[in-house]
Image (cartoon, rainbow, N blue to C red):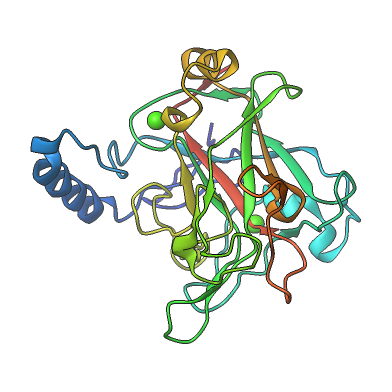
Length: 267
Ligand SMILES: [Ca+2]
Ligand SMILES: [Ca+2]
């Protein structure tokens, strides 16, 4: 826990706690959206805005790490410093496209586990950025999975919806359930917003979306998870095609700025 006073919204990188400045507007917007959706029984992605959140603070596995520059995995657990809609942040650890050699990062929240709760439990911040005004985004998609023990992982469901699923699409709407899609506005130094309030950017994940009936997924929903894995989509097979997901010809691998979670409990 923080050992010093914190101004609202000030983050404490040492403990991974993050602030919640500016959540009032998002909470109000969320409430309105929930009221509007109530008749249909729909939820709100931003529900429970203000629940304490924390960034993953420990690197468990980073086989491609060099320890220097973008090869330093500590950049993925040192707080999120996004570059905004039009610029990729540089406070990142870069994955590659080498299956088993540099395509994976596993992080955790020291001494804690992430429990199931309303709305998304996890937000992954990469450094995607918009290209001009066309709606296209420079992306490096990644597949996210969670685990109780660090050995057995359950991947979040995902769908690549491009007309030709063997060709790369720069339209973010074609990449559902992936990380590395949405630009990051959250910046610890200059725009310290709540990571689950809709203002932070990044890509959120909800334990409710893990496969229904999967015993491991059910165990995670009931007892929480401790480990989160991010893997370059370019080394993951798309079940729809039987081949790995395509990547932007200019891509070199997802660049991970940080991962936030909420509903944390002591493990
Ligand atoms: Ca949830
Ligand atoms: Ca970072």
